[in-house]
Length: 303
Image 1 (cartoon, helix red, strand yellow):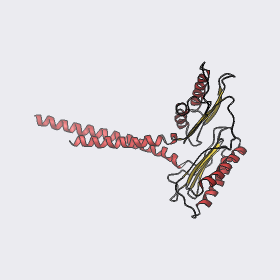
Image 2 (cartoon, rainbow, N blue to C red):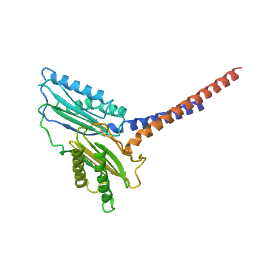
Image 3 (cartoon, rainbow, N blue to C red):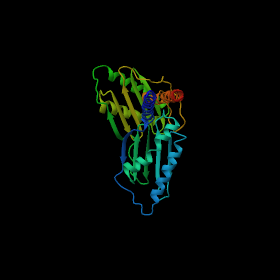
Image 4 (spheres, rainbow, N blue to C red):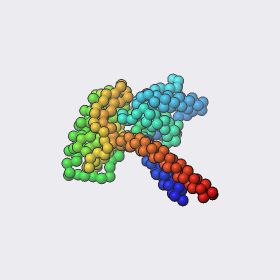
């Protein structure tokens, strides 16, 4: 009876922690929004589908090596241009895990449209069939603002200062920057092939939209065609954040500075994995000892 209770407790603890690990590793794959062209492409010969499949395969393969990649596939009549970009603080492994989900999601959410964009919290994918009408890089695609507001507390002044720091940082970071200023966490990223000057202008535009659209909301995300920004206010301090340190990036891949507070979830997941591994090992040893003890007792009783 004691053995069964011990085993049940250990298994409950193990699976509970495994659920923590699973939720930690999927934080960057949350769907933010989708953008689908209204027009489906006509594909009686299957050439568009082949070109699209080849493009998806190329993007997923490259996501193991870089955080931004743009390519063109197909013939002159079936040309498709596509790209992916991962958040600047993701590892190559996490970038691949994020991007590898996007082709299936694009097909599921948009079908065979002439253009599609799927944005997850850690990466996005975009493709366009040749001839698709272009939009301004400053066009707002999506916004979300926190439900809680804290007007009149000095928050907006701190947020705006943090915005200024981030706008400068995204230029020095060549396309990606994240930092914390007086409990306001800010993050900005531009598409990997956007130059520093245009990136600064795009981020400035996004920040101005955040001020207007979100007002005194304690958090917000603004996605423009060529850049996006996000901010969160933590009155009690940003939880488990890394110290801010700017780092340079390779061309087109996006650099990073301080980590997103949510990225600390990944470190937590690794720590839990180590604990679970140790607990499982100790638990297995305890079970073996209890089993041996019960077996010896049974033999003694038989004699």
